Each structure stands twice: as C-alpha cells, then as structure tokens.
Length: 211
Ligand SMILES: *[C@@H]1O[C@H](CO)[C@@H](O)[C@H](O)[C@H]1NC(C)=O
Ligand SMILES: *[C@@H]1O[C@H](CO)[C@@H](O)[C@H](O)[C@H]1NC(C)=O
Ligand SMILES: [Zn+2]
Image (cartoon, rainbow, N blue to C red; front, side, top):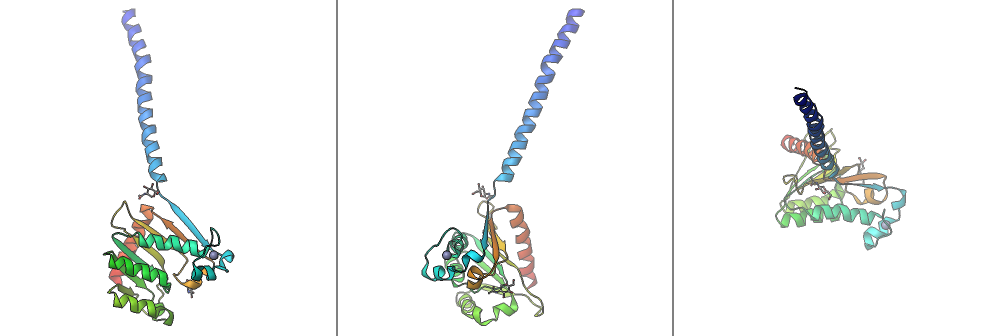
C-alpha cells in the first residue's frame, strides 16, 4: 500500500511541475510573440525648426546640409510617395509643394489611385493654382470641404492602405508648402503602425463620402 502511495507522490512531484513548466513556457512564448508584434512598426519623427532657416537654398540647389536639413526630410516624404503601389490618399490643409504634386502625378501615371482632399479656401489660393491645374490636367480627383466657414485643417497622407504589408502614412502639423519646410516650426511622423493607419483610413473614407 505504502509503495503505491509513494509512487503516486513521486509521480505527482515529477509531473505536476513539468506540466506547470510547460504551461508557463507556452504563455511565455505567446507573450514574447505578442511583444514582438508590437515592436514591428517604425516611427520616423521629423522636426522642422530654427536649424532649417538656411535650408531654402538647399531646397533649391538640392544640396544637403546635415541630418536635419529640410531637403533630406523632404526626400524622406517624397520617397514615401514615390514608393506607392496601390493608392495615395492625401488630406492636406494647404498643398503648394511642387515636388509633392509632381510625385502624385508620377504615381497617378503608373496606375496608383490618387485621392486628394484640400481646404476650400486654400485650394482657391493663388499659390495653389499651379498644382490644382496640374491635378485637373492629369485627371487626379480632388475634393474640398463643403461649408465655406469651416477649415479642412488636417495634414496627413495614407499610402497603400489597402495592402497591410505595404500600408504606411505620415501626419503632423505641416502643410506641404515650401514655407513650412524652411521657415516654420513643424513636425511630421512617418509610420507603418496599422492601428493608426486604420483610424486615419476610416476618417479619410468618411470625409471623402461627406465632401
Ligand atoms: C513596419 O516596418 C517594420 C520595419 O521596417 C517592419 O519590420 C514591419 O514588418 C512593418 N510592419 C507592417 C505591419 O508592415
Ligand atoms: C500652414 O498651415 C497653417 C495652419 O495650420 C496656416 O496658418 C498657414 O498659413 C499654412 N501655410 C503655410 C505656408 O505654412
Ligand atoms: Zn539644409
């Protein structure tokens, strides 16, 4: 009888810790996986500040003057756009940056679906006319908000939001204007965080349907 009891105790002492260990190990692996999932987004934070006042020349001459150079930052933003394969959704208070409009037109020509939402007043501003007329010439659809007294104050751009492996976006304080790149204090965040992209994507579709 004692022998049986001892065996049961021995078995319990051996297997229970083993099972617990196995459960904990599985949990740990799942936790590790979850943490890894959270890590796999990139965030590129750009600031335009007092260090960029001299960059006007660099924007024109296309020479870089360091890591915070407006020209370098602009290239990052333009590269985002030039890498688009499926779609580009722009929602921008003011868009007068020639290079950006040109990238949109290039993307449009290679079959990327472009949609642009602008501010009503800013879309009619003189500075924007060149770009707007280019959009019209190239059949790029753009809209602006309905009520004249409100501001379409957003500054964001979604790239390839339909494809989760490609989707990315940027958002921040910055209008896409030459002035914002060299004179203002601004920030732009480039990211592929799918949660943020989803929220902005829903908002863009809402606005697109509303305007
Ligand atoms: C986001 O970018 C990182 C770094 O390039 C990459 O490892 C990750 O797979 C990307 N995530 C998504 C959801 O595309
Ligand atoms: C940019 O946006 C702000 C509002 O966010 C606006 O007041 C400003 O006039 C715009 N234009 C330029 C050139 O920065
Ligand atoms: Zn510079």
